Length: 360
Image (cartoon, rainbow, N blue to C red):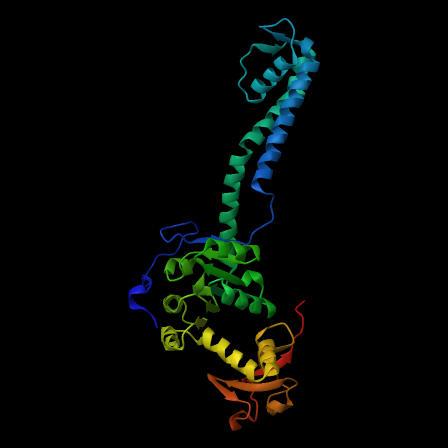
């Protein structure tokens, strides 16, 4: 039962449009991860390139040391050449060592100046990359917002949420059409590594669901760990989207009516469903194996809902190529043995058991 003094705070009505960056709620959009080298490797590579440029410059100066004048020494040593390369590439330029011959000055123009530019680019590269990455991230988020619609929002990326995502992907739903919401950053990192868009934040808050573009979603799956959280998430999602199909999971049967009253179209009691499957498997292991097969999409047999074809309209459900177990007519679900379902109509939908076909 839901404990009243442990209820999360109800979402505020009339909340403003959520921003893309962290706010008071701490929620944040995370796009699918792209492969890149580890940060330490990137920094090490830049340091190595900078040292290589510095060494090359010092070597060039030392090889042409007779063309340089040093105020402190009569001849230019390699240490002096390295010192000159350092102050030159960093644009410090104390002027104590200067090129005096035509060859040395020409080398400064054609070689050392380009090396100075490369060196400076490497030094400020990290800062520029951070700024560019932020700009690129904002652009990607804006582009994603403009394109996403009729997508599925999965609230909770635990065992239930992952299974729901795997089922959607098995039915041919594109990864770009699935958005995961979870308060744990590790869960969202796992989702982005799986190629999904993730939102870190509390799904009971309107701002978080706005970031997930729930108002434009076609389905919302509520797979939270707590039943009271599931109630609040369902209320908030239904407030933002009246037309989406909301499917919620609860642990206790007595909380299922609260989910339906909150706006859930389908409520699945996870503990009871697992118990029924266990009982069936005890009495008939084969029947339990078949049920597990039906519940696992993409393997063996699948339960599929599809529209009635023109060739099937006016026929009996038994005439369909697949095994019809129910007929959906309007808002009613008719058992295959129901007399009203004896003749299929073109506007009907049928729930069938079909053999799985691999998704290309």
